[in-house]
Amino acid sequence: MKIPFVTFKPMEAELDKELREAFDRVYTRSWYIEGVEDEAFEKAFAEYCDSKYCVGVGNGLDALFLALKALGVGAGDEVIVPSNTYIATALAVTYVGATPVFVEPDIRTFNIDPSRIEEAITEKTKAIMPVHLYGQPCDMDPIMDIAKKYGLFVVEDCAQAHGATYKGKVIGSFGDAAGFSFYPGKNLGALGDAGATVTNDEELAKKVRALGNYGSDYKYHHIYKGNNSRLDELQAAFLAAKLPHLNRMNEERRRIAQKYIDGIKNEEVILPYVPEYANPVWHIFGIRCKRRDELEKFLNDAGIGTNKHYPIPMHLQECYKDLGFKEGDFPIAEEISSTQLSIPMYYGMTDEEVHYVIDRVNEFK
Image 1 (cartoon, rainbow, N blue to C red):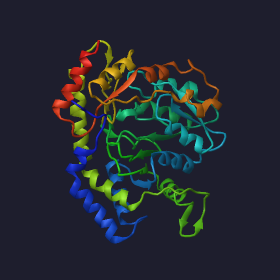
Image 2: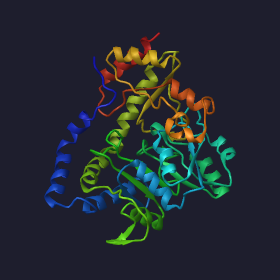
Image 3: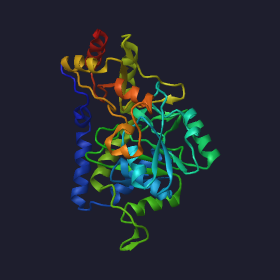
């Protein structure tokens, strides 16, 4: 049996009519930037995130970068980020001229460990950027308490966690702002690059919108040195067509994840840990194995697609060698990078496919 790591075909087949209608609406209207589709999606997604404002942007990295920029984070500032995440989190900090300060995760959840944050705070610290990695919510209460204690901004990186909840409250609604990615592979994915910044602060939302539109608050009037990062009408229409199905599709991911958790019984494999406060959406189902590369080859030879999230931790990436870190400086991030393996997780997986993956993982010795 051949099982890809991810495929969009089952979802796209199911939503084919709605997606084609979305394309036809935009094409017939001949209006492609900052139109009614964008406005409608922003309103719907803000409501979905239990927030007042949503600003569509070009991608998830820009959603974070523009939020930090709008908050006034810049040169000389520091932003606390987890040592284990996709590099876009750190790049958003770098792009505003600030310095990312890495804090180790809880190895059970892969998310930033709140108990380690305070020791990383200095007089230069301006913000904390927790990442709800793999669709697993961070422990937000202690993070928000620390931010309040030290007067720090909180920008949530929700790129992988559309619809996840923490103690019953949807992620993205805790901090000063939140950044979402709608990269095609996300739980809510466009048919190209797209993103959004979500906030309850009206002035912040206005500033993010202006910054993403060449710094312009109205045509040919530029109040900031801005960027070009806007959600186009076509992607907004596609996202609006998919959004009403997101909760249902997330529930299907939860069902698949539970089958994995119940069915994988191999002492070589460490399964994900879900705290009581979390209701994840399983963008990624990541296991750990000391013999990760051997397990990956074993599964690949059996026709099962896999991925590694992420094989080189940020502090050892060449682009961040200027920060002066070396191997061993962040051992938990390094442990995760060397042992983590993502197995197939996507809407439309059949029970037969799920059980095939489980059986092959259990056969690995």
